[in-house]
Amino acid sequence: GDIVAGQDNLAGGSWLGINDTGVIAGILNRMGSLGPSDGKRSRGELVLEALDHADAALAVEALMALNSEAYRPFNLIVADNSDAFWLRHDGTGPITRHAIPAGISMFTAGDRNDPESARVRAHLPRFEGAAAPDPEGGDWDTWEKLLASQEFSDSSNSHEGAMCVTTTFGFGTVNASLFALPTPNQANRRPVWRFAGGPPNQYSFSIIDI
Image (cartoon, rainbow, N blue to C red; front, side):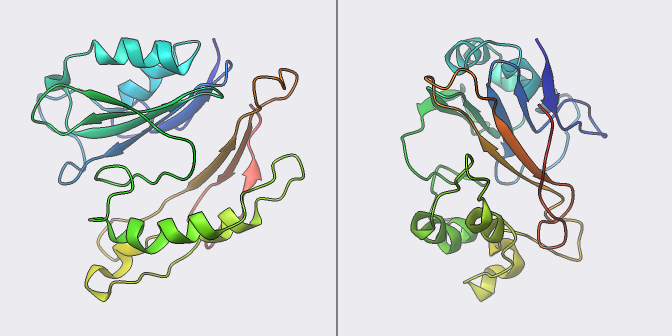
């Protein structure tokens, strides 16, 4: 099937994408595992592997069979319009699978809604209190503003607690995405992918043709 995804220019693979059956996959490095490592496979392969399947449950079954020792630690999110899963690999044992419940979930370099994350502490309440996007009406304003937020609540964590991160040491937000999937009874509707091709406090979101 067809896949639309970002491409990692350094290691190949992808960090985020969608396929033509409406499966979305995105991967995050866990704490202390930024970048590639000699002797380890690229985690970007895992997104493409997930997107090679017709639904999220099938993708997760295939991914659970992989050798976890071949990869540095990751959080992998795989979702479709029926299910959403978090695959957690902390580097010390096998990959574990967790169903993501309905509602707002945030992932950074730790666990789901992890209070250790300054970004989660600052912004999870904001997402929970914000009006959800209205994809049919084309209104994504509240979440676009949140993704562009450079506010942070903990001075000790400085910019790393912001949603849109800017630093002077090569760590920061380089793009942003918003997805909407049609419900199963809307088979004639297409998913929507809104993408900002740079930091969303500087770049506007526009629709990617999928």
